[in-house]
Length: 340
Image (cartoon, helix red, strand yellow):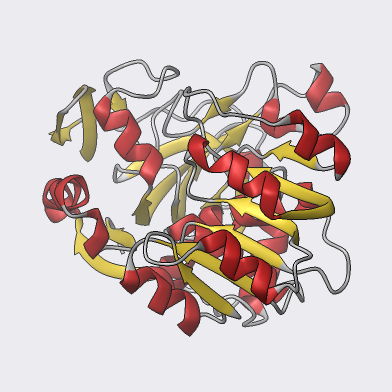
């Protein structure tokens, strides 16, 4: 069968691989669609310390159950499913307190083990989520990015009437915007340095947008908030140098959600944190957010296909990687059709 395999940093191709076996507790899924994520690009660049090569990437995907292993009762052959990529041990401290997404033995499908950029993939059956009636496999392949948004918003604990500032209008920033609106946060400010992304943010319901290089972001945000600042700030730009600005823009008792994995140090002015009693929270992957996102999609409160800028065949995937490598500003979500 065909798979998109990264053999080593910057060495990637469509390859012929063996059909994986199905162990007890696993299901074999025939992949229909998969989305390319920024973290896939990090793996291709060799910037992910958790990856061992060769690796079949892909953690945003949906398909149809082809076979099930011994003891599987959660799903049956023929079920349409999407896949939560987070695999946890269930016994460590984070798992015991209900935070399996930071399990001490964490594995992520498409990172620690082979993922969805292959025609057939074996995954733990417990990680499969049957799709609501009427939700297409293409939309279902994009559930995972929305779980990232749901997770960071949950970590920031919004209160009724809170306003939100989103740094970065890439795919994750746009999913945070959409998820916030679906959860009743009406006033969302989005800042980015690419005009096209800000246009999309406005189309998706941003209350206000600010150009990060042409405008004085801090002055504009303070004008919009009457000098109070924002109770909620989400860092979807993942640029460590922006943290001091976030601290200044946060209102007293504000919460800042950080998503970036950059190893570069950030300047943290403790005075800003203490005098306003700010809360800085990290957010990694998702903590069992698939049911919530699927329900919102089924209700029509989230439309993931608005994120898709390119639909390409599996054979075109190497070219899609080249485009994202050299012209990332031309794409939002690139959706790969593998077996639908």
